[in-house]
Amino acid sequence: MRNLNLKLSLLVLVFCLVGGMAWVTVPKWFQHSTQDFEQCSEQAEINSLSKNELKTLLAECDKRFVGRRKTGGGYTYYDFLQNRRFDIAGPNPSREELKYFDEQYTLYLEAQKREMNAPSSADRQNQIAQPDLKNDFVVGSIYPPGPTIVITPSAVPIPRARSSVIP
Image 1 (cartoon, rainbow, N blue to C red):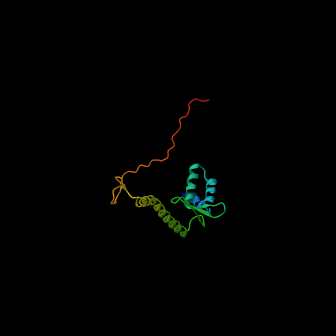
Image 2 (cartoon, helix red, strand yellow):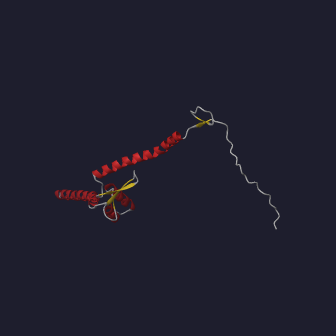
Image 3 (tube, one colour):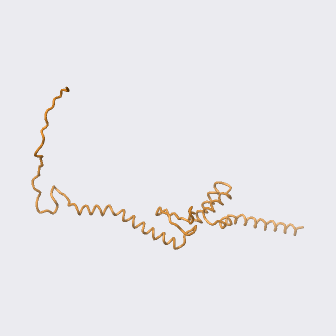
């Protein structure tokens, strides 16, 4: 009798272990059965029991698949650093595509730097083109400015007086 209880306890323990392992690995089966983010998110909506579980499953989908399916076919990747989308071959970018994104980001940063420096270089160009005026004479000039020139019109029409009475 004691031997039977021991075998029964061992059998229950084995079933509990197998059931526990199956319970733990179900999300992994779920993850491996999807091809891209869109399939993964559809599966998450079907399999989730609560909003919190849905958020968790969608976060897992987002970690696994960074690319999003395009309507015409193919995938697109959004690079938030550049605020730009790139076409990619699959649901995740390849190493070559990641290298290309990095190169594009370097070019983006260089363009941003040039754009930020453009106003200061334009100011310098204006300073070179226009001489500094100090105390009403050109800096570096050997001649002081001459007398002030007053320009007056030579033929100014004189207005005629009009009658304020209305006929």
